[in-house]
Length: 418
Image 1 (tube, rainbow, N blue to C red):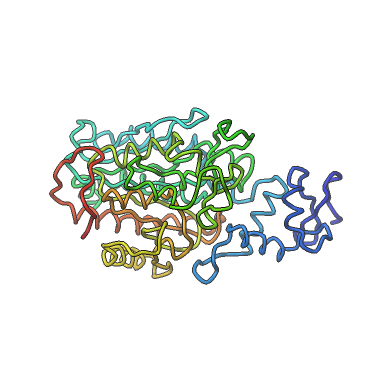
Image 2 (cartoon, rainbow, N blue to C red):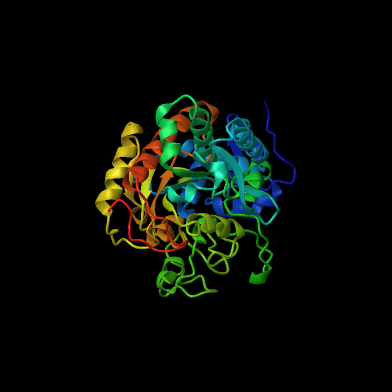
């Protein structure tokens, strides 16, 4: 088959035996990639660009399918969607499935809107617990499971959705699943970033942030990195969002390579802490409810179990417990992940698990898969194996708080599992 190059394309990528045109709207980005200025973007040039930009993490620390990541980025350059798209749920399908679970298992499940996104989509959670309809679950220790803070990390949404089915459907047939619902107050939020996720599915598979326009920045930029926007408003925790020496409105002093004050950057932290409605909704659940003892967040990719801190290399005071739980989770993952402090991968500020930890909540992150959008042949195994690690996390938190004392919403209680 001969060349298939868009007439207005300035740059090309190779797919098999064909040379395919980069979409004209990606020309500026392509020019940054084209190191040898031949207008053909070699796979090695794309790889080096993605490493430099941070889209491919440190290969000595993360398990990465570089070829798949480069292939998915070519879809972005051509303004097409990767072949894996059909394997993933849409936002509407997720909402419908959560509604269906609540209808089928009303004694243990209810679908709850935590708030609305900038484009008006509900941020849906499945609330799971015995007595859920009676409103008396605050006396139980709470665990929150989240996914899809970053829009392009599609598998990070699939695991919480799979877990929601597993827990609701197991409530009538699996004694261990029933026990978890009797002992705990569980919240599953598959899609924390519904606008960004849908934009990534339908318009740009490489989109990471939410979709709020940012007129307050004086630019036409869109979107904030939700996992750089966490802030609890407490003065003693202010440096978790903006470290000392990192001044607002400047980019020359930005903290590390993974948090930015540039509104056009993928890692833009936002105009202020917790400025985004999606983050506000999750903070209200996690810090405002008063009984939440553990939060497990899903991201993609790299096969890692991460624990705080992300903002400093200083070890957490209950490091042994984080390591113990992380290794126990990794065991059910066939020891295929790496258990490490988040800052060991790269330093970030405004991350969710730092804010949770500072408020006495045991908080971990799973970086799942080896690319942002694993193909269909990998997805089912990812769902099953990572969901098993989720159950380990839930069990550890519930075991440590079998007789919780109700607390004032937002109150700090010291660190969990210590």
